[in-house]
Image 1 (tube, rainbow, N blue to C red):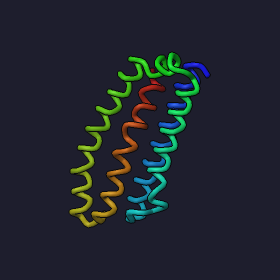
Image 2: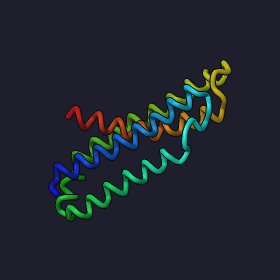
Image 3: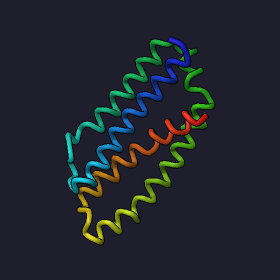
Length: 132
């Protein structure tokens, strides 16, 4: 396995886990239910993505894994986490208004905000990586 393949596996894992979390968040809002589908699915998708990335990095070897997770990866991840921080902060006033108007229940807001906050760094990283 080469560095490029390992980077693509990481990108795919982040994208799938991020889309599952974002889908759960949107489905919770659309159904106004904190469990629109299996509530364990976002966690399982994240753990599965981490396991696939970890096993891929182990099978690629130390030097190739180091090259795939280099300074450029850290810069892009730092940007993604910075965006996700402010995205999560922005969710609070948005959901406060939605809850005050009675459009969203607090359990639904908790489920939707939690999974949206989990999806944000993963999908932001994918977007940043694909743009560079």
